[in-house]
Image (cartoon, rainbow, N blue to C red; front, side, top):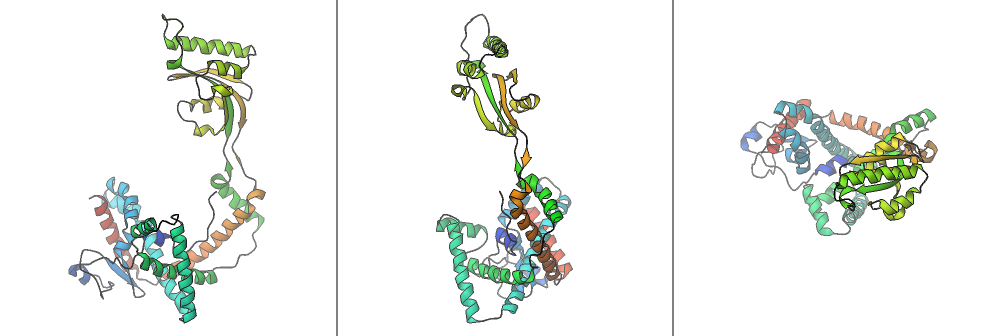
Length: 373
């Protein structure tokens, strides 16, 4: 079961990286035509693009990370640039909006918290705890953790600084979001109906016995007839014996070549859709009969099957009363997410729309080029 988690302002940013030490580089020509570029302390030029929000630079290379390029590469390689822009733009817009709101939210949170020794000490302790937790998530392998940071465009110093921003911003966001109010029964039912297909479904299962005659493994008793002919004859004879009341399990032990022959051909409850070839044909056959009935011979490739259905359980869902806490958590999550998105949207509106569009257009063009190199 996937757990509902509180939305933090850091999720997308953490996925795509935000290393402060790996600033992109710009040409003189680009610098001349980017009024929002942060010009102080820029490294040597190499063709990036940047915009400044609240005095902090958002660089195009922060957006165009390897995970993002990997995501868009199949799309870019199969589309024209215009088609690619139409499909990719919403994702880049959301990513940029997240980056902008993170910056402005952190700055506002810091203003609200104020500066002081106690605050810095608390942030340091909380940050060190997050660093340890990050390393533990890689089973204590420091080298693997460091490699993961590099893939996100970070080193340990920038990761610590980033965690400070997250911690401070999260505390501020919690103060902004609405308190958990009463949940009506209709809200509960509607949310349950939306969630149950993905989160609370209990798959259909079938239990059956199988005589699996594998043609190539059948001992030839008549050299004048093919193995296939003799396998078909054997399967037909077994069906006749079963119809007369012979024990299926005993016949399976004697004649089946399948891996469950020693247990009387019994297949424990399985999900029909999980049956691999050549046994996948049994799922459709199980739908046609009721428990206790026999079907076959079923011929498929190198196998001839005779099946007895023991039990059939249809797809169902966990009842609401068993998952009510999870549904309530989802409702609370959605309420808070809506409130945060509205607040975040107001923050993003503080930036110039024209500059955002120009930055996005640049990123889309460069992503398309890199994906087709």
